Length: 305
Ligand SMILES: NC(=O)c1ccc[n+]([C@@H]2O[C@H](COP(=O)([O-])OP(=O)(O)OC[C@H]3O[C@@H](n4cnc5c(N)ncnc54)[C@H](OP(=O)(O)O)[C@@H]3O)[C@@H](O)[C@H]2O)c1
Image (cartoon, rainbow, N blue to C red):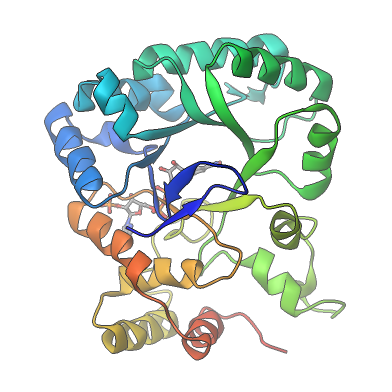
């Protein structure tokens, strides 16, 4: 699989990441098969969170891979912290405890990447900075980032946190592309012009922050996959035409559409299906044209004013 650097860091990662939020749907045997297939395909970047399956996804990951020091060097592990039941918690204590929990379940001594999961309105950035320093000094976390953050929230953290924030994981798919649409509709009196995220896409490009699109196949908030969905006839028609042109399927094109954006994004896929895993990874070898990118965009219902 094609690789890239995470932000402007020294960490080389595959351009498609494998999300483990749904891993606990699989048995240990199925998870082993799935994870080894991912590794065969070069997809060795795995996205976790302490809360996925209440911790079960991290534990199953380590069990299925029979985590050894050698295996640990093969995989790149990202996890997230800061969500607690019914609230968010970016306190010093919570961050340190959450990371220790993830390390224990993942049977590892370090995370390659740690993200703050969702902005905590009670964040004290000085406390985050202290926690990150402790984690870095102890060798427990190598690289840091955020998820679902807008520019001003990242700036607030950056005022205190010494480590670069190289990642912002955000919901983005062809059917959930407001961060792109608002850029085409600047200053218009239309819904597409509504700035929901503080121009996070441009901000991340300006600051070498890799956007990791989460739920790259979903529409709404986990409403289902738009691929072959009857509510998206025009989009699926165009996806099929572009897929035929490139000799691949529509799953591949859905990811290729994200990879075609020059922001150098790293989509995090969530499928637990072996065929869809392979089709998603295949996107790293497909470059769609500017015309195809715009055709898909328009077919998803976004205006090009
Ligand atoms: N930072 C955050 O706040 C946040 C939030 C949500 C997720 N995430 C991360 O992002 C990852 C991906 O999220 P997601 O699982 O919602 O993403 P997704 O890849 O958009 O959705 C995958 C789900 O869609 C189903 N699906 C049905 N048809 C599909 C098709 N044609 N192609 C692909 N999938 C199809 C999959 O089922 P099959 O398994 O049967 O293919 C699976 O249940 C998660 O694992 C997690 O790591 C982060």
